[in-house]
Image (cartoon, rainbow, N blue to C red; front, side):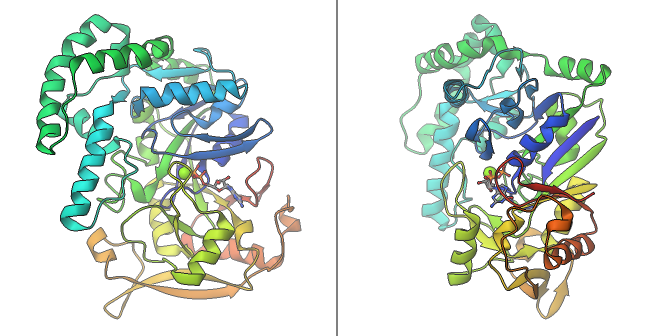
Length: 426
Ligand code: GDP
Ligand code: MG
């Protein structure tokens, strides 16, 4: 069985915690896009972990983790992340971690380029893209320019080192144009020696591995890194990531374009949050925002930035579900709404006096205003509920309403960050 676990909203829906939970039924967990700009928080019996590059299945014994060809891997960051987990007693070896030879490498100059460009944008327009400044946009740009290094090249350093001078010369033209110090060939060789060498044993043809695993009847999960609205094609461009975050890309980004998904589980939050710039129609401001941000602990896992927050957004979520082809939903963080007597939902947008139900083009979003409706809250602590029957009727009504408005069944509801704090609805 091939299942994709993907984000329905702007990210930080709780994908990491759901992957950690659902990975119980899977043999393989595979990340298929993005880089260390992700922050997946997982809390289980082994401790609290924030994963940036490693698939969340790394915390489960017996699960094989794959970093697919759609990923951009910062090798220095990966070495650090692996060391931290090993220190915490997590076993990582080529047996349970396989890195695609076709995955691209985020270099220090990509990070520099990201920073230089965000700073230039800020000065020139006052409107940066809200990048996490981890070099993601520049490395994907270089992928399409065919001037990027790939993990498989670490296995043949002689050939790799021969490619460095021209790429460095080409990249320095950009760096100098921003008025920064050029990078040197020696720095790049040192970098590969320090952070590439230790990863060599993990590099393999993950497509071959995954096809074999599939033929053996193993269950494979694809773990998305960011939500639908951050997708490079379908998201709120340019306030998106630079990769495909959607489920349909999962088999490609994992290395198995020949395989088809059996199902797609969308992770959707009971309210909304958004990190960084860009249109966020349902957004709360002032005290309303502060209350929800505090209750939800909405501070970026990768960056610590306070997240923008708002009520559940039907227009954006219905679009996210469509983009992800989700056939079931895991609704997360329902307990965060415990404190509310009335819960608002953004049911529509309004543009020039007209009601909008379909998620519009990014530019159009700027003019949209939220239309809120409110429903009765449960106003009690549901964090201890473990069955549907234990949930108050107002909570069941809220879940049923979201199902109806979004047109998708909600199979799981989470009521706390710990692994077992969830309810299976059907
Ligand atoms: P991801 O990027 O989609 O994996 O999500 P993040 O890890 O960035 O953000 C989700 C945050 O919510 C983390 O701090 C989780 O520990 C926390 N969390 C996840 N599920 C629940 C839940 O059901 N209730 C509460 N209160 N917190 C949760
Ligand atoms: Mg996150």
